[in-house]
Length: 99
Image (cartoon, rainbow, N blue to C red; front, side, top):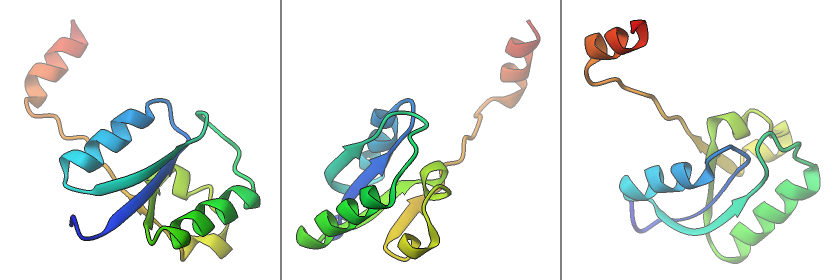
């Protein structure tokens, strides 16, 4: 929905993949905060993210992996997106793996 503007954040190996998937699926990404892969979030990080989102009237979105690291008190302010991998030609893929 292009009416909703998002602030996204992640601490993953390829943050650009996360952003690209959102944009391809018509998410209006206005702000992106990138943390190092396997980052140990601190309460202060979430306070800053939430304050920035409120100040700029943005919804907060993260990866499912990062969402699991969020303390309960911040989860109501943050949504996550779950991404499923679908293999189009499963038989060929299995054949490739076996070779």
